[in-house]
Amino acid sequence: MKQEPEHFSQWEEAMQKSKKINSKLREIIEEATVDAYGDEEQEVGFLTLLEDNLPFPFKAMVIGEEVEVVGVDLGNNERGVMAICKRGGKKYLVSVTSLEWKGKPPKEAKFIEAYKAWIRGNW
Image (cartoon, rainbow, N blue to C red; front, side, top):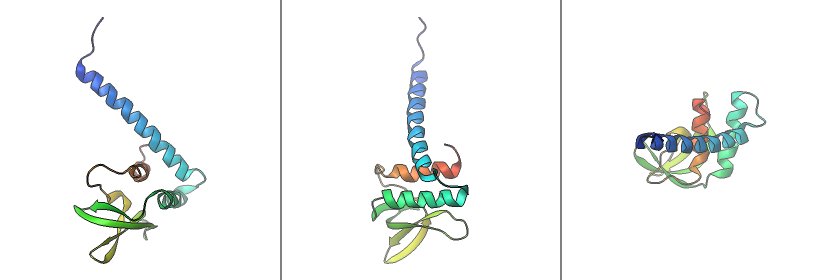
C-alpha cells in the first residue's frame, strides 16, 4: 500500500478544519440573512446579529491600538456595519472588519468572522 507524504495528510487535515469553519460561518450568515431581501436588509440582519451576540463593551485592537468597543451601528454612505469604539475619552466609528484581537480571539469573534466572509462573498 502506498503511503501518503506527511505534508499531504497535514493539508487534508487543514482542509477538513476549513470545511468545518466554513460550515459554521455559513450557518451564522444564513441566520443573519434568512428573511432579508437585498444587501441593505442583509446588512441590517448582521447588525442585529452582532448587537444580540457580542458582549459589549469589549476590548479589541484597531491599527495596533487597543480600543473599547461599546456598540455597533450602520455607517453612512454604504460603509457597512461599524464598531463604535472608545479610546482616550473619544468615540470613533470603525468598520467591524477592521477589528483585531490581542491574543486568542474570543468565542464571539465568530460573528464578526461571518460578517467578513459575507462581505467577501466566500461562504
